[in-house]
Image (cartoon, rainbow, N blue to C red; front, top):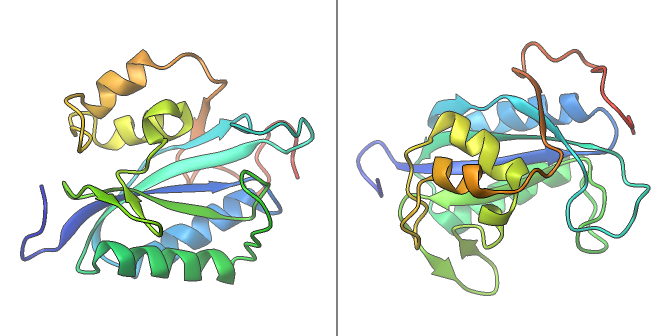
Length: 181
């Protein structure tokens, strides 16, 4: 898996629960396409807010994008933060509502643990809203640092209220989903 002449295969988690959620996902996909080639897109999933105490948070739309990139892991993270900012992302506190959230989930077979970047994403294997779309596009991928495939991890997760709503091109600008922001 790692680096080769075509770049490194990376998977990016994409989410939004504020404003034009599907519009933010579409903008993110367009921007991420500029960072590499061979894009793979999961379906869009509607999910309950995860790991928050605020019952008033709107529902999230989530998906995963896969790409080959020549950017290093830190450079990729910097570009994703720039894309978030361009889409109105404001950071006040952890797990708050957001217009756009982009996370590097997996970057080749790289394992990184520093204060700016942890790979694979440290909580991804606990989150059905990450593992279900990731399993859709790369079920046989073994998560670096584990011995399990993405599909095995996804199958072992409890029901977390994740619901597939369709391909990004099929989802209307104002999808018929609960709790629109």
